[in-house]
Image: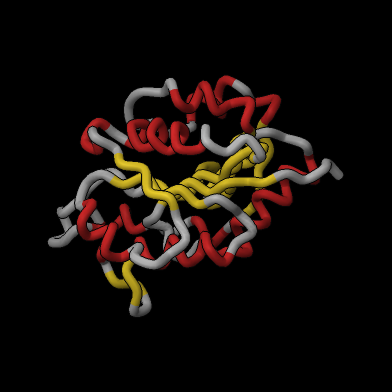
Length: 190
């Protein structure tokens, strides 16, 4: 097993949607908003620090995150896609020299647990792979672990494809961890 250093958690929230009648970030799931649930899941995991990238509906999100131990990164262009959020979150992580990677998590996967996030990190340690994608419903995606060696590539991405292009370019560095709890995302309701 590899020696362990810190692993951060980036929770991506910056894109906005109101097609379901209210900001998706504030939708209640089991008596808590989606964003609050995602951050509390992160706090219960082994990942530190926790960076939350926000943009659209930032007032709603800031209110929900009061008193939680997170760093907030503001995307100035949330409408330009998920990679705008990734860029600002990656910039925030540059302040931490002692992390070897980060888990990228979408705020709107309410069934993802702290245990699931920890399993992704453990899969990195066991396999030595620098990309560990969640596997569910015959797809792979978020939440996923990205090693520090890919931070520069992540920060330079544009558009709405998230880390997918990096996964596709570096298949030899990719493994998966089966997480059936990641299969449900609220975006299916949009």
